[in-house]
Image 1 (cartoon, rainbow over the protein chains, first blue to last red):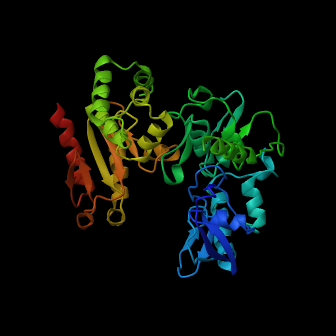
Image 2: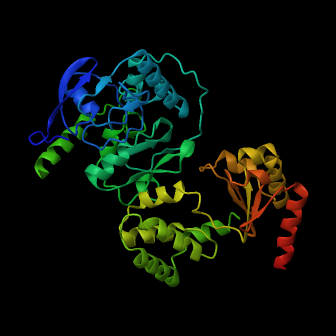
Image 3: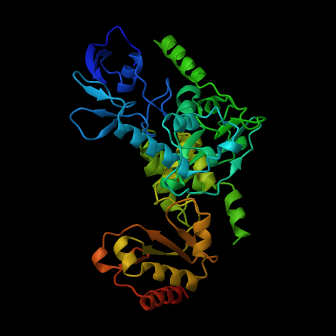
Length: 242
Length: 183
């Protein structure tokens, strides 16, 4: 994605503005490079994109389907809309469904005020959730000496899965089961503290957008994470390997 | 069977089981996609038709596939069991057609007859498909989303034979036959 020299330059229209982009770039990368903001949640620069959260959906002229910007490559002559009432409603619904699925109680969350899901809800103007809360009874895994896994806050963005597989290479995390029963698991559903493959590097904690993976010893509001460190590390590594 | 379960879970893998897994791994190789074949072979060779945690750990160790990925695959597919299965498997279809023809009542009656608590399993279940086994491991009751035999609804599968237009009485008779057949 970062290779600049060889890639062909193509032109696309983003929000009516003609911009140039490198062939093979995603719509998201092209938009960001040109100062256009598209909300994202499961995307983290430096990790592979999965298009799971559907917050980065954009409108493409010529098709009724909304496309995820993080996994759609740009093509010559594309005309993309990054903001519209339809997109706002769609993104709002995606956030509401995420909030309804688990127990996202901000007032008792260590990530309150530092949470990407919370910020996204504020940004998109989610004032209430139209759907019934699912209220699942979920466990909190405190077995790790340094970290905590709280399934109640997990949105299954799989950033931890990807960062562990792609940057740390430990493959501790995966998603088990499916549908509403999906959970993040370490190794063979071992307690995190007993997971032999975990190197306790803490990358998953940095990558987690919510309070699902946090460090121990923080009270409400105190868990500050810098997911930018993951992106910077990924970029430096990519630079070195080339 | 609160006493039997931990025993099963904690035992070491026996030599013949290890041999079997080794054979399965060498048959399917280490190419991507081999995992499903390995898991299927290992499960069908097991007496209780399930994959024990020790077996999964051993497969992970031998193939180099991360344990988390193996667990993810095993829990994704309804085909794989993590619990020992009963001798006879009764599978009640919970698809729309069967539901409208009363498959919920069938399931409840079946669970009642076999002394299984369907509600309890639903509260703390972690999969979208139910699989309950009686304490003596003679019966496993499962549900499935659809057999594709909707014209014959309600459908119940008993030991891989599909019974059509099932009512409580025919199901009861079938279960009794299985019980007597074993004696």
